[in-house]
Amino acid sequence: VDIGQACVDDLGAVVSKLAHLKAVRAPFAMIRDAAGLRLNLRKRVLVPLVDFSAKVAFEYRRWLVEELPEWSEFLIQPQAKYLGFMLGPAAHKLSNHKKPFLKLETRATAIRRSPVAPAPAFVAYNR
Image (tube, rainbow, N blue to C red; front, side, top):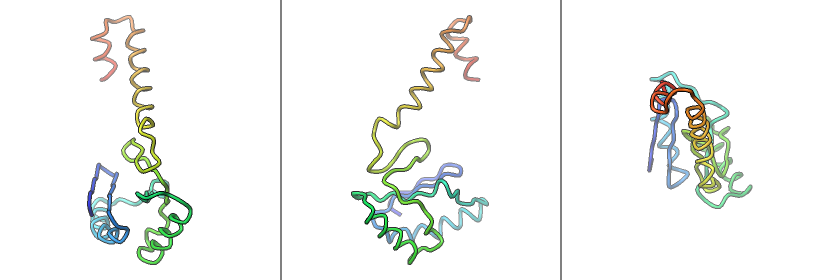
C-alpha cells in the first residue's frame, strides 16, 4: 500500500498499481475481524487515478472479478467522498468547501441573532 488511512470505521488506501490492492486485502480482513466491521455497500468505491472512461471502469471491474472477487461489487467512479471530502480526478476542488462554509454561515447567523453577547453565545452554541 502506497498510502493508507483509517479513521474509526472509514478506511482509505491509495495504490500506485491496481495489483497492489491485493496487499490491502489481508490487513483489511484483520481490521474487519478485530473490529467487527463490515463493508457498507453504498460506500465501497474504487477511484482510478487515470483518465476515467467506461472502458477503464470495465477493465477495473474485470480485474476485480478475476483477482479480488470479494471486492468485485465496489463502485468504480472518477470521484468519491472520504471523511467528508470529495477525492479523485473528477472531484472539483471547490466542492469540498460548500458544506463547511454553509455550516459556518448558519452557525454565525444563529450566534449573531442570539440575544446573548457573541462570546457566550459562541460557547453555548458549540457545547
